Amino acid sequence: MGCLSSKPKNSRRASLNDIDPEKADLENGRRAEPESVPDFKEYPLETLKVATRGFNADLIVSESGEKAPNLVYKGKLEQNRLVAVKRFPKSAWPDAKGFSDEAWKVGQVRHERLVNLIGYCVEGDERLLVAEFMPHDTLAKHLFHWEKQPMKWGMRLRAALYVAQALDHCSNNNLRLYHDLNAYRVMFDQDGSPRLSCFGLMKNSRDGKSYSTNLAYTPPEYLRTGRVTPESVIYSYGTVLLDLLSGKHIPPSHALDIIRGKNMLMLMDSYLEGEYSNDDGLEVVRLASRCLQFEPRERPNAKMLVTALTPLQRRTEAAGRSVSLNQ
Image (cartoon, rainbow, N blue to C red; front, side, top):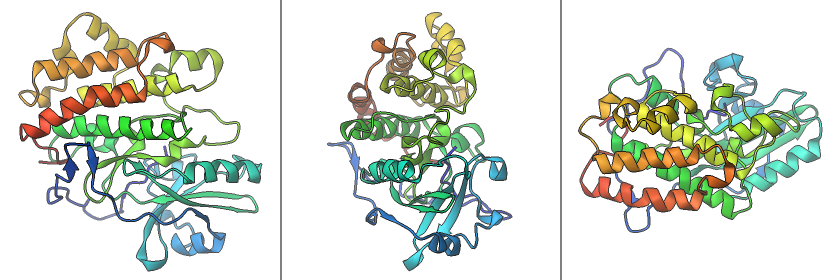
């Protein structure tokens, strides 16, 4: 799934309660600049072997562990910089130039809402990507498998807005396609802020499928044509909105039946009771419904999503509602 989150074995998961929840500039919706990102470059295979202790199984941080088709390792480069190293199967990218070209294109895009790609490796049959390391797990973990308490409404809104901002930025930089967008593609950085994985900006293979999730969550036009389009990305974003609203992975067809029945409470996570106004909740439900329209041309684009979500996020934060992960 392209997960970059930390999942150390036999150790307590890092607590998020002490993370400073508020580094947002409410006037422009942007965080303070994150730690400087190194220039994109090609890494020697030996460097990445050393960084991952020979691709040690104990350093695998993919959500599915060793069962994942593309393994992601936690690594450490020079100056103790932590990175995530994604290793593709040997058969995934037989064309070395095609892989390099794709990686370079993605690696030139930088944004505080993205988990930025900082390098790649092509040696022999090896195809690897190197990205920033996100220490605080995935959105899926915090929504579906939380340990202490469920994610608050303020942080759910922030995740929705930040992902929309990341997609808008990518679209503005001619990267309009994102493959298999889902809650596992959203990760939390050292400040507890959500970011969108850069790995989804590349296919899992030159000719591979763009979606690995259950067909019930796949854009209807992709089932017909096998092609991902910018409108397909918005459909997938709508499924992430459903995850945020419900705290569960609900098939879009079932969610739309609930929305058409005008019974928002059946869709909303019961743990959120009292945390949001009905108007704000309805606005996000309507936005999800628009993203999940059967006809691609009827869906909003990323810029429209940012415009719709920004005032909701500002109201929530201005009201003093929590926007940290576990507070």
